[in-house]
Image (cartoon, rainbow over all chains, first blue to last red; front, side):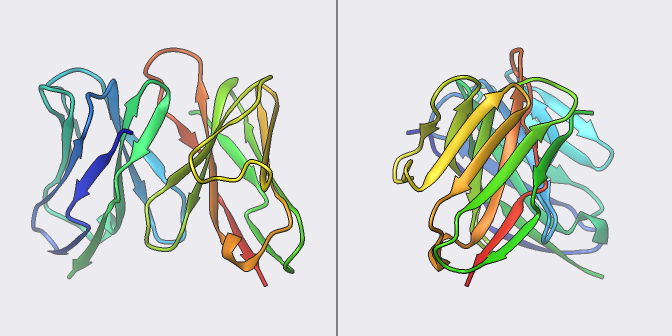
Length: 109
Length: 116
């Protein structure tokens, strides 16, 4: 079945620094979605990428979808304490979403 | 924006109890709803897909007789954990998908189930 691999599992970042989390799918995706889950909370939809090579930005967050529609990345610049949480990618094939393991981000001031 | 309401948010009950969780789409019709389970520090694992008016499709390893799903209308799906045991303790999250291509899934707030 479809598998979505996400790395790194943990990211400890100095406030103000940048970091990137990566997702790779074993199959071609129709789209990829990104979610953020705060401790104790539920996943909150951030963005969806549909087109091959698509790049979208949300303030300090940059999302990319690979040309082959099998990989994606989330890059956060100038990390802030509000960025703490777990970021999940979720690849969609047909109607199902397959979630990556998530990248849990902690920030040191 | 699209809102999905999930109730209850937390349940603590004795072993052997059956627990019903509701998932409602508040401002859109959800042709498909999904039920996930998330153990601490792990990702979301799809349990089953619920389509309005038809039987749910369960993922491999999920017991359909233990996790009963009913999707009676375009705005409501329910998950009943029957005869719950401590190993069923987890965070259960529903999501809803509206009509149309490439629509994002919208998640409920989740239900934290603790079986004593």
